[in-house]
Structure formats: structure tokens, C-alpha cells
Length: 181
Image (cartoon, rainbow, N blue to C red; front, top):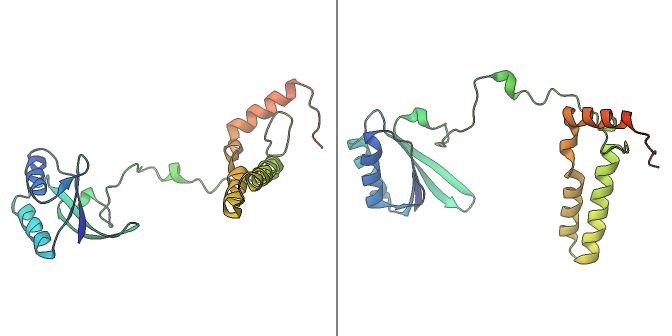
């Protein structure tokens, strides 16, 4: 079986863990090892890691089932360094209010794409449709053309940002705008 080890060790435990893992697996990153190993070999690694474990030891093991699927097997040492799936948690916050992004009421018809006050929804669709037609002309691949359409429809989605819309409205107040049919 193919396995990956992830180490989140600190201080002296880092060197002890690296010695054990370097003996059994190939280092593929600063704190990551990977190897093909038998069940008995995996138990030997786990036993050696437990034998040298301290409060600063934290190693997770994952069985690589296929290119897109892995299975979490075990953790030796501090389980607090990993989440329930044995993955190292990154970019988290204790502020719950900072993560509430779905409460914004977005009505796309009230947003503009440019200083000509072109409605954003019409602009996005037009760009997607032109990308679709160009892709169909260049390459006769319907899947690619549909992908170009979706990419075109999403290309300016960041313009729903309140700061950008404020800027657009301020810019359009200062100059005479020709309406786009």
C-alpha cells in the first residue's frame, strides 16, 4: 500500500520523528513522507513512533487509495495538531462574524460592469456568449466551447464588490454617459 506521513512535531520530537520516517519513507516535503509499504512495515513505523513519542510529537498517516482518494489511518502523538480527517488545519479564525458571507443580498440587476453603466448580468452573459462562439470557430470541441462560455460568464464576478460599485457610481456622476442599447 502507498502511504503518506505528515509530521507536525516540534522541538526535539522533530529530529526523532524524522529519523524514524527517513528510515522507512522518502521525504517529499519539509514535513511530509511517502512510500510503498506493507501492513507489517506500517505497524513497525507506528510502533517506533509511539516508542519515541513525547508531548511535542504529532504524526498522521494516510493510505493513498487512488489519485483522488486517500484514507486517514492513524495519528501518533498529539491529535490536536490535525482535524478529524488527519489534515493539518490552516487559515482558521475564532471570529464567527468574519465568516458570514452568505448574508449579503445580491441582486445582480442593480450592479454595473463599467462606467457606461452596462448592467453586469448582461455584460457577463455577452462575454460568455462571445467566448463560446470564438471557441466554436477556432476548435470544434463543444466541451471546450461550453467551458469558455462559463469562464466568460464568471470573468468579472468580482465587480459585485461594494467598493467597486461605489467607485463606478462616483465615476458615472462626474461625466456624461451614453446609454448602451
